[in-house]
Length: 351
Image 1: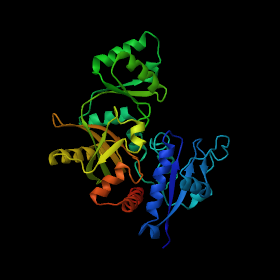
Image 2: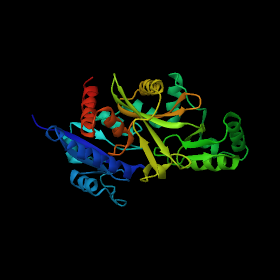
Image 3: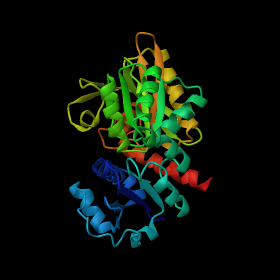
Image 4: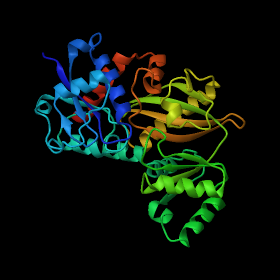
């Protein structure tokens, strides 16, 4: 029996393009290790920043160099798929952010009738949109910080309407609060605000990134995370914690070496750790996720309260990312993890 050809789909039209390349490089390495090398053949498929899909030779060059392709004037392949796609038996999409983990690529792969790693259209889209996600969490009875969802049209409205919107936010939420684009990852466009003037500026900035915006009340808490693996009967990992000295876990802190520390396993009471695991599985089910997800929480140590923050259905997948490290600490190493994800994708497709 020949090797299963795995289409490693990376890059994409997203602000997290470079992060996707790093994740893809780590996954490609894992698929070429140990027993995976005898089971799988990696076919890299790079999507550049303009949306053009590239053949495996160019894709391999990007993967090895770790640098994106400058293809600004060449859209010849925008709607043409590489010939190599004809042989792919399962896709491993590692496209972070919009146009990658929001249900768009998942819809395309579903139409192509090829198995793929991760959540389907519904789970991906709900996991990407923070307002839809939090609505699902509310229905599932999961406790959260106070929040409000607003639209770009409300922010960029008349001089009479915008002040009323800010009044409503101030009446509902207490400073400090966080203003976020609803559909961007990696902390892009997020601001911590402590006053009316900062709120107005942050809303305007967030509206430039997304037509849906969420404002969340701040909380003094430890930031902890749990990884989930599986389909209909998922499992939860040990709990990890992120510590940092910056004002919040912004893009620079997240992707600059040395600015944040991961603590695995997190030092938590056993009852709290078990509660977080159970809530992670509930969140996974609430958005109809599949394959993998990382679920983020706030642990308010002063009261013992656990609040769910968000679910990420396609978390960072470098060798130093929280998701694979959590499973490493739980007993599943990186090569085993990517193998399990491919098997889960094939099982879900057969169902």
